[in-house]
Length: 143
Image (cartoon, rainbow, N blue to C red; front, side):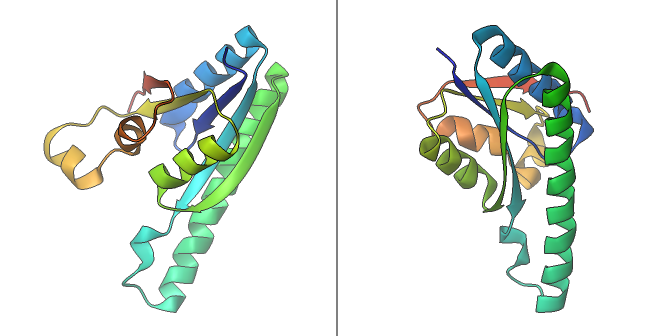
């Protein structure tokens, strides 16, 4: 069924609902949760090396904290967990990780943005849904 469950995190408090759902699903199925944080490297193309390194360091620290938060909650609930900090384009890295690790289902949060805000910010969740054959459980997160 759902033995390998992937839940990407962006480090926001809002994604807690998706993490909780992934851990609940793993508890129910006896599965294992994989949690990834992707340092988005697309944003750095036009920056100087100094600025790029500062931003990368800050986002890497945010990712490490986000992964630590998921680890803490999984440990409290005694749910097996694998984590990884990735670099690249978020939806591509999530899909690549899913393929490489035999993921059965992806659990993701969405802010359900619309209009201009959606156009400007895009949606990693939407891109994952459009580019995978895996089931994706989408949890609407509160802002």
